[in-house]
Image (cartoon, rainbow, N blue to C red; front, side, top):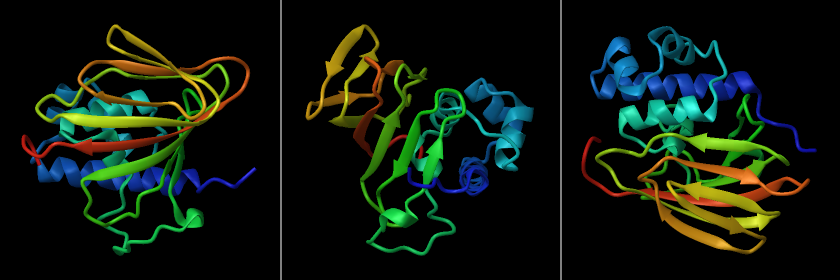
Length: 198
């Protein structure tokens, strides 16, 4: 099995991004806590890279900051811009709650209207996203590379097998689960419409 990027490196990157985005929005920790529903102490731990937040927690933080979840994994502030992202250099993060693994495929630090992520969801795992993006429309396409994924968005249910793809707008709570005893691997392409908070 391929070795993952060191967790502390990923958590440091997430912490730096949350701190930078909070500063850009001129939000105090208290204000971000109120907007996200994540406690001030938990946010402080995230910013100092002293915790491993779950995908659901990071989703709430991203929504309160007005950005897609994928942008919390960017290294635009610290990574030299390059149009090439070698697989060995792509950031990998594992959700401590579900074991869900995400690889940031898009080159970091390069301005682009979309982001590509590769996700591996363990057998029987479930990852939930409770929030939409409020004043920004976030469009997402999933392409299943291996396995079967059940994706629920609001009241809509979709079962996707290998090779299937699904286009959707993230405007309602959603969750993804794997079917059967095998993990699933899929690609996610996300783009955010301009406007709203920047």
